[in-house]
Amino acid sequence: MGFLPTLLTTRLRLCPFITEDAPDVERLAGDRAVAANIPVMPHPYPPGAAVAWIATHPGAFEKGRELTLAITSGGERRQLFGAITLHLNGLHAHAELGFWLGREHWGHGYATEASRALVKHAFEDLGLHRVFAHRLVRNEGSGRVLRKIGMVEEGMRRQHVRVFGVFEDVVEYGLLRDEQAR
Image (cartoon, rainbow, N blue to C red; front, top):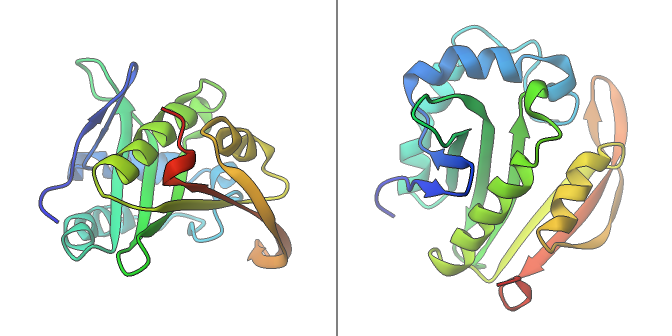
């Protein structure tokens, strides 16, 4: 698939992670409040795990499995806000969208801005037909993001994931290419 892309928005730069981001990944993702909303996020975040995670990104993209980008400030000084990912399925021309932000970056519209840009890239540049996502029922902030980018609620999976020992319901969303707001 080539090199990992860089996408620019009004305020953000979505770009490949660099090794120097690892301490910020561990600090931001290591917050229990962040991990509580991402069932696959390890908590506590293991020291050194971010370097290993970042190293997987180019190969996963090259193999057409995953596109993971850093959500950073758009200015001269790079500040890491979080991560955004498309889990790609070329056979079915669809991808699952996922994102996380450090807690200090919640409530500024960054997740919406980054998600809108990556979904546009998925449809226009990667040629996908469908993008879908899910959120924990209690994570209404992510629900607002998904609705703002045009996703439609498609259903709920009851007690689908276990987070810190508790089974939780998950709400499913989807967006088709021809539904995308232009």
